[in-house]
Length: 299
Image 1 (cartoon, helix red, strand yellow):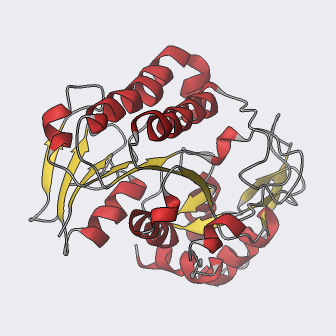
Image 2 (cartoon, rainbow, N blue to C red):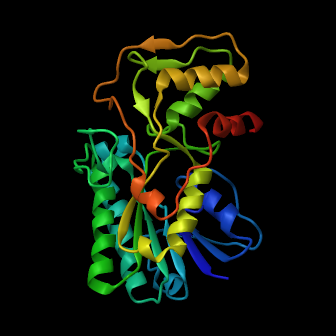
């Protein structure tokens, strides 16, 4: 049994990690309740109401694994308040790393973002693709990555970075532009309204179920070859926004059409991950998009 600290354990990804890991491990959640998607945690999980910028040394020192999902996740807010974004995503991460450096950790798993890539110059996007973020959010996430990798090289801290593409789940935050299109489509179709697509709807995205993300985290915790590395977390399959809308309309068995509006300024046209590197350590995404979306029907 491992003692696992999950920062942001009440958020979308963190809460699913808690659900999956708590039965066979001692799980501690650190969360400041700002991006909460669920109330409470399982009975055998310790919930600490706190911030990653607090003194976390006592919390980290007796921990085997840190899974760091806590972050300021709004791209829009990062554009308006770059300092607030950096305080959370850069200094918060650095604070955790510094506590981890003084502990005897087996693994420090950092959640980055595909936002580090900016506008793709080629697809599929491998981990070697240029990293040229378009927002303070993407920049702060990339900075966190660089600190994690440096702490591995300089101090021997066993860090691994994950770059998720478009994570989806029934607990996702509709305001998150990287995955919110699914929850927005779901909400409209459920209420007999046409889903709204900006532009021609032929933009492509790589949508990955949160359950596959959980599998990947479990994998990088176990695999020694994951230490000091960065991995794309995606399916390696692209879906157009029009195809996504059609799947959701079919799931609800509704007679609706896609409502096309003016394109969004700066919208990335095509996003698709190369997951060869993750496959090399045994990662296999298991959940097809339609299968994953069916879970929304039961919410």
